[in-house]
Length: 180
Image 1 (tube, helix red, strand yellow):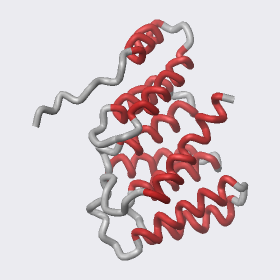
Image 2 (cartoon, helix red, strand yellow; image 1 turned 45 degrees about the vertical axis):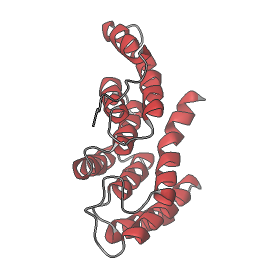
Image 3 (spheres, rainbow, N blue to C red; image 1 turned 45 degrees about the horizontal axis):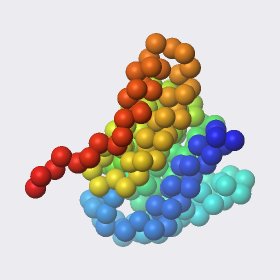
C-alpha cells in the first residue's frame, strides 16, 4: 500500500502544481513563450488521461504541452512521469534531467525526481535528491521530502549505509539561518 501511495505522489503533486501554481513563480520566470498556461493545462489533462489508463490521449496532450511550453520545468516533469508510467525509463530520466537543468533550485522537481529514482531502485541517489529538495529555498514541501527520504531509506535494508541514512533522516528539519 505504501509503495502504491509513493507511486501516486508525483502524479498528485504535478497535477496540483499544474493546476494551482502561480504562472510567474516556481523557478520558471524565464518562461516567456505565448502558450505557457496552455502547456501546463495540457500537461495536467494528459496526466488525467494517464491516470484513467488512456495512454494514447495522454501522449497527445503531453506532446501538445511540450510544443506549447518546451522549457517549463513542470511540463517537463509531467512528461517525465508519463514516460516512466509507460515504461520508458531512459526517456523519463532525460526529461527529469532537463527539468532539473532549467530549474536547479526547484524543490518540487528534485522531490519528484527523487521519487522516480526511489521507485526504480536507485535508493541512495533518491535520498540525496529528497534531502536537496527539503533544503531548497522557498519550497513548502520540505516535510514531505523528508518523509519520502525516510520511506526510501527503509529500502536500504540492513546495509552499512542504512544506519547513516536513518540517523540523518531522524533529525528535525533544519531551521533557516537567514538573518537578513
